[in-house]
Length: 312
Image (cartoon, rainbow, N blue to C red; front, side, top):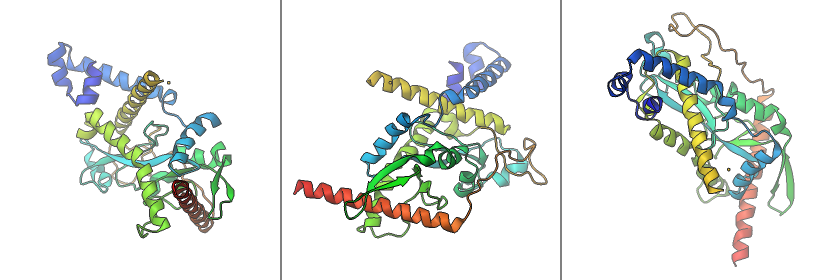
């Protein structure tokens, strides 16, 4: 219970010592043991769909939202790093005004989490070394076929699952984002509104995590980046465990720190062992991405038009 108090209420070990009559050192030792054990079983609770049946359950939900072929939402969250080493403070200040660490995940039920990164790393960089995106791009997900309707009521087939994201990601066929400058009343505008509404699940997940586990909102108070990574993974695992219990009642990262430079902080010891993604011809990828997004726009417009005709 003391460990959960630290995560959910951000209670310092000194306060726990007064309330439990257990020494601060013992609380620290058990807390490190707890998050280490939780981190070791992450693959049992945080994982991508293992077969077609599990993937279909996710894709069917997005198909009902007029996004056929979608396998989840993806985004990056920044968490305050209160005890960031002075040597790394400047490289950890990204869009936030304080040192932070960034993670990337998918959907309200956490099905994937990337390695921890500096707060200065943007979405385009993180997605290049995200192992989950690589699996969806190159694994068996890339062979999954899904259907959509074009403007002439023809059923077309597309291959490869994709994730919906915001406009800060790369123009890859595996990542679909809204249009940046589209009229609200146009087909592209309706599609963008639909995508923005559908991807609120990942935004809500970050909000739930930070409110349920206050230590993520108040800041990670440890100098070691590996401890911060275990913090976040532990909160993710507990989130999925609680979510699975609710569902049953109703019915059922390696640390990547980038390339070190002169004067790196005391915890940064080696370069990342996660290779950057090799995607080939960027122009071809962008063309494929634009074609797929256009097809989704046509599908959304067709479904909306067919629904209106049924009500007439």
